[in-house]
Image (cartoon, rainbow, N blue to C red; front, side):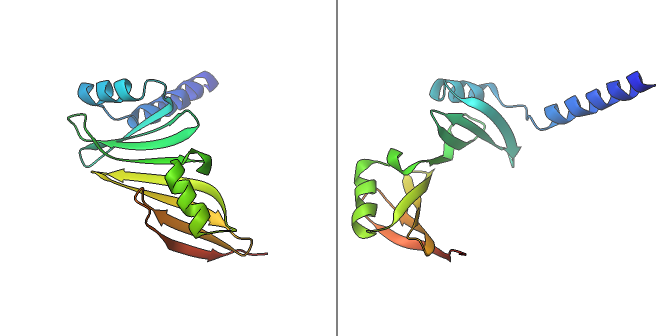
Length: 146
């Protein structure tokens, strides 16, 4: 009886794993593998006829959205501030002196790219929204609890 229960549990567990892995089209897989050949911890999801893939590559966490033809619709990358383009990092340091950056979310959609940089000054956490053209603004401000 214990063996049967263990087998049923293993079957349910493996069915759950496969249920979370959508049937990704060959075009999407080919496009992904050509672009992100060193991806690790890959996890696929399907929503409303589009695919999203979550993975890690070169210490950068990615979420990339594909249509069924294998074209990238949009993407998000999460990384350390030292990996920001030099001009964006320079803008942050000049326009927000005394603030320490500690995280970046980069969002690309169509031809647009925005950087959401987390910084702190000891009293507040800020999210600075920046672009590669020199524009920036305080997007969010949260008080630290001491």
